[in-house]
Length: 373
Image 1 (cartoon, rainbow, N blue to C red):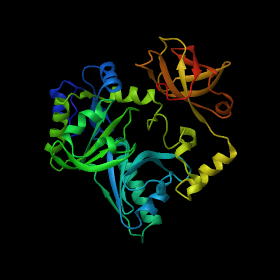
Image 2: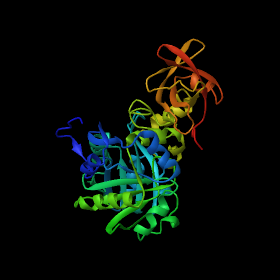
Image 3: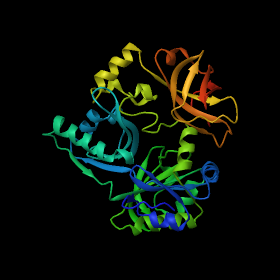
């Protein structure tokens, strides 16, 4: 077992160790990558119910009568389309259009929002959110609070997740809309946010739990395991998200990549008004000259793509793999690749490309995600 010294740990660290988890450093935290094995955990989520400790994620509260206007300036999606009780996928961008982070926002009211950011970006994101407030909303009624170290997050995912959770909560889980949420009691713990969001593409919920008393999240974790949920690590979380074509910050996008180049045009609402990066992204869209993120499936079963591998066509290097793995469900290599302009516009679904694996070009077919329907 490696020693992690003074690295940050979630309130469930001891439970993970007791349950035999293999842990790694991720986003500055010690996190479980697997328990029994990635394949078993992946299949548990696709067929039953798996539970992930993702308490390393960051949570910012944005409150005040100008909170909605502030978020509309900060984020690329249309905040006005997210009513109370609903969540929305979105992103923050620099002035040049580069993605600072993708995130979720949850609306309790027009005056109270929860913003959930990636663990590795908490400090950077907090600095940026504070900067935007100071430079554009210094006189506005907006209060920012970083509760990242005061909230835990469990993701209960899979087709059996609702049935498993319902006897343990007073929230009517089945009545929640997709990307909806409600406050309630879970396993005897009050003030839990129960949200029908997730990162696996399966039916499921995410539970935001106050951790001023770490016993709260520990009790919920233990009870859900007793009820039949399978503990899952970040390894299965990655294979599950890639089968659905979900982006991973730091691989499929970063500050050098615009939302259009990250296949996030569907959440980039230029018509909703100015936001940080609006001008640069609008100019890029109008020109049409930008890289494209495409999905692909390997033609040979044993060929497994990885992040950083070159993409070739007709002897030319045309891009790079951003995410790649062996699909556990399909039994084939799958991935996403960023193609340089103009190749991204000319290479359509069904086209043949090559992925350079150990010096040899292996055939692949451009395929629009999700890879697993």
